[in-house]
Image (cartoon, rainbow, N blue to C red; front, top):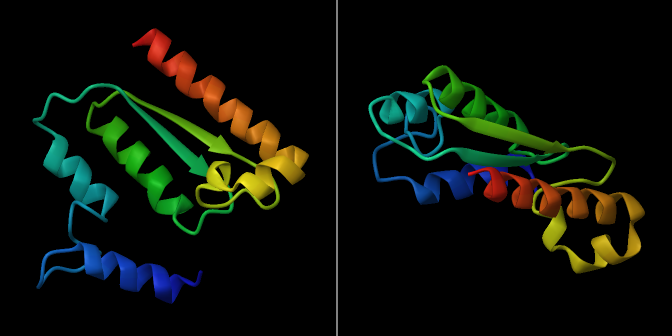
Length: 116
């Protein structure tokens, strides 16, 4: 998937007349501003190192933390660890790194749920 394709999908998800840069759905800073007064439960943010959306995801977690929200971010690192890698059965079955990272995510989710 290319950045151009990602941008097109983003625009399809937004209300007509808005841009990806200023809407809370896609702008980490706008999302944090929109959530400032909201009482939100703790959130677990899972990010893949080679995900094209990695930087905005990390920025989202940082912005929410600055807004006073409880955020735990887990970054799955490694070559080939991309967007929703853990749902790619072939990768998890054939790549020891992907399999290890998928198990780590399951452990992170369990730990997060157990602690909240």
